[in-house]
Amino acid sequence: MRLLFLISGFVIGLAIAAILFALQNKAIVAVNFGVWTVEEPLSLVILLTLSMGCLAGLLISTPTLINQSRKLARQRKRINELEQDYNETIVNIDNQRKRIEYLEDSLKSKIGASLAESEPQ
Image 1 (cartoon, rainbow, N blue to C red):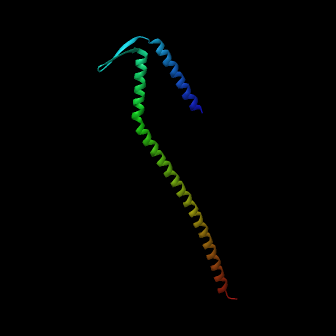
Image 2 (tube, one colour; image 1 turned 90 degrees about the horizontal axis):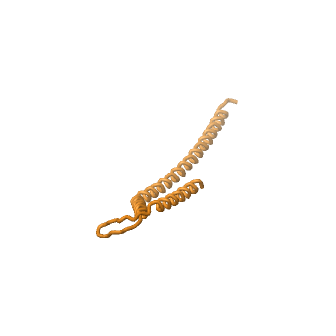
Image 3 (cartoon, helix red, strand yellow; image 1 turned 90 degrees about the vertical axis):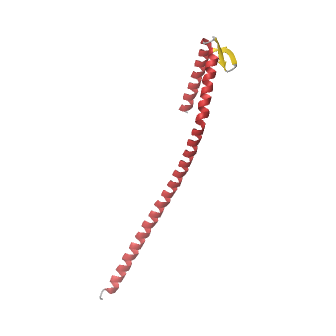
């Protein structure tokens, strides 16, 4: 929730700064691009350039973000599989321990019975 407030505060602050920037930079400038010439306010030219740069950065970073997301999903799945294997191993160890105890008790009782039979009366 704090992150949402932080992001919304940042966006609102950025919007206010953009409005102030636009109001203070009303000068008309000519922008030449190849055979085209456009005359627009300086603030609009700068804000459009900034927006196009942000969009280009987002488009360039998108494949990396998708790959990281997929890798993270695979790693989470692997972690879950390993945790399940670990839990199964713990159960197996516990069952083996109980079996060992049972066999030891059984052996002790058989040894005790065998010793009792071999004692002279």
